[in-house]
Image (tube, rainbow over all chains, first blue to last red; front, side, top):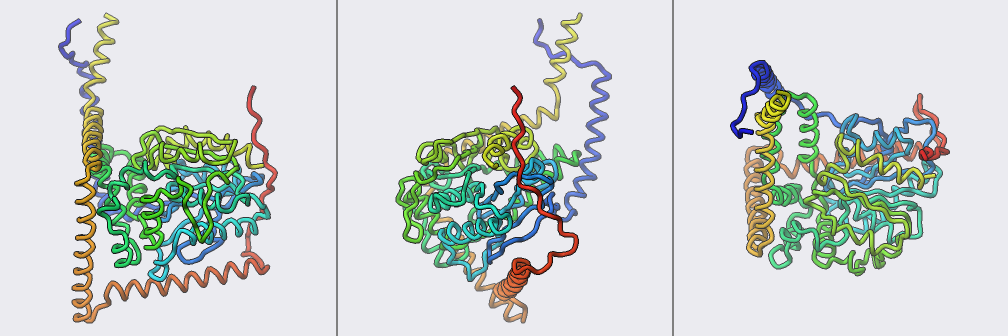
Length: 361
Length: 129
């Protein structure tokens, strides 16, 4: 057989040319729309604020089923990001999926901290905001148990809370891309290396750490992502769904939150430099955080191509906790694709439902 | 003949310009990111980053101070003043929310149209087999 490229039939070529011209038109029209459009609306499901204290806001999503599981689900989002990533839009919302599968869903979300909240520390997050959210959920639902889930640093906070308050109301623990062994957080280790990164000066000077600092680190890890994203956006500008999805994710990334300086200092010194959580040397308000005290069922969810939280960084959940019921899901995709998007809806979330349903009665 | 047609289809698939563009972007993205990944592992990178963060901080502060005095001279509200206004509004919003929650918890009637609580008796579906 010859290697010479064969010419496709003339009808196919003309079809393709017509299609490309149509797409080019649509790109230009939609490209203009894109440039002048307001920010994309996010949030598919109805919700109420049920607890609020400064930076912390607890939402309860309105159940959509008449009969729901006994144990409510509380999701802790990372303090540097808005929680609506769990509920971007219908058809790619984890919240919508779980509500339709019969769960009572709460999200602990964050507002940008005020200057007088610069002194909020790890203890405020794990002992105050998460603890009070759990208590409030108990008041609302009348249930003493809760499934605690967390994403990224929200997961780390959830793990610390579960260890400190064990045995307690936490009946199940779900960790989405949750770092515990921070020696494997390669990017952040390089970015904030002890010899060159003066965290004290940064915190003392700024009080509140601006989001640009974190965004800069992410851009360094993947410098081509932003440009490649825009190139792909242009190629797909004709597609309404693609553009809508791009704009929602873009809005979420752009709305990265500042974080309180003291919390940031603890994150860098205790978690990154000392790796104290992994080593069993982390003290919160004078109490030692011992992972072995977590004996409840654990579901560890990791993304195969996560450039932020590697698989190794999550492994103490699988081998240092005291639970005898530990499961792991390694999902295709990257850091964000675990909690948002149509691929997770098809592949990952049904597995979470299978695991959690039998532990929620 | 059938085999030859199959060959045509294969070649045609390989020539898809959109797919080729997407493949190109993807490969470029992976290569740049890999290169950057290697770069971040070096000690020099950490040193440069630490220095850059510090310089950025100093520059930002100098710029903010400059801007602050300029806005003051023009009798315009500065960033700090706007921030403090936003924080006061935030505190008011916070208090209103707390009052609403306190009223709800102390047995005040729920807003009209409130839905009854669902039953918490759901069981997982039976697995086939």
